[in-house]
Amino acid sequence: MLSGKRIILGVTGGIAAYKAAFLLRALQKAGAEVRVTMTPAATRFVGTETFSSLSKHEVAVDVFPENESATQSWTQHISWGEWADLFIIAPCTANTLAKIATGAADNMLTSTVLAARCPLLICPTMDGEMYKSPAVQKNLSTVQEFGYHVLEPEEGYLASGLEGKGRLPETNLILEKCSTVLRQHQSEGPLTGKKVVVTAGPTREHIDPVRFISNPSSGKMGLAMAEAARNMGAEVTLIHGPITMNAPTDIISIEIKSTEELFEQVKNHSDADVIVMAAAVSDFTPEKKHAEKVKKDKANSSIKLKQTPDILAWLGDHKKNGQVLIGFAMETENLIENAEKKLKKKKADWIIANSLNEDDSGFESDRNKVHLLGKKDAVQIEGLKSEVAREVLSHIFDNS
Image 1: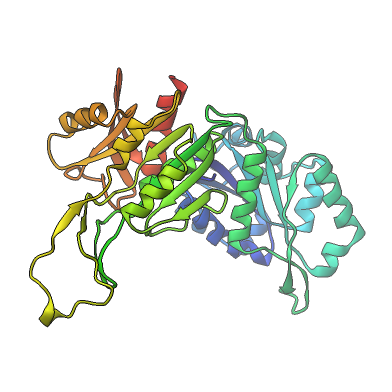
Image 2: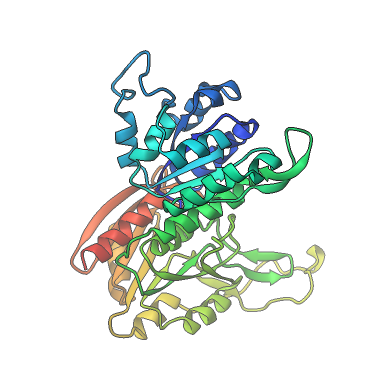
């Protein structure tokens, strides 16, 4: 849900300000672009250089910066307010909370709150007794009446040396809340109401319990396709082999190992409106699988193989009316020619083709360079895999 999103991170003057640097990195790892605004008090805990280095953007602190530039001017709160998909304030002190509740705008952060067109998530962080005080509780009620979102603090050891409710929640909880807020404010997309199945990662064809035939697929492209479909409103089921990343918690996830297991799960979900076959499926499997580890001194020097089921071809032969079938083609030569043959032979609607010989493309890379081939259309797309996935699905369904 955070992939490709534009996020403002507001940091206020509490001891938890240092944790905002970890939150910033986590947001970036989730695929978001982040800009930071700080209150003057926050800079007494963490310097602006830390956040500017991490975000690759200047940090906004003052409404009237001393050295005004093209990127920092007194109207920056307006441009940032139009730019952002989400505004997070973490940590948010009692002082800044009071300003938001009353509409005060005496620094860049509070001015940007008033100018923001996007949802606002407030993470109040302070001493336990301060948090329980009538004024703070009233301000929390007020900002929620405004439609702002609040993530309650956690209980634990506080900077004062006391224990109570006032700690900034763990980064993963903030990310989950961000995703929830974005979903609540998400307008209907071209895949709203559609069921989408995405396969991802490698399959493993075991020779014995410790040896198998496989490939270097990380599953990154498949996960990117699943997340892009979800962000476009789809109900997504992800069927994946052994992948290097955790599947998103808000996507139905089914883990498989072999091509045969993948085939069974695909058949079970073949009534989906859209099927994206991004998994790197093994074409061959050993004819004989040994129940115990084969000892070196007793092993045969050759392994007899047989073909695995052609899942994409089966889906093409069993396509229901209106179903969209998207396949992948990984090639080392004659990329377009082989992809066009696959498109026709497998009765797919689209083939996403990429070459292992291209830089920043293929297995394990965070980036990809693909050719999207349809029956009447072809386009080349490159960038981060999250960007490629979004552009691929937008091209297919915004033009359908």
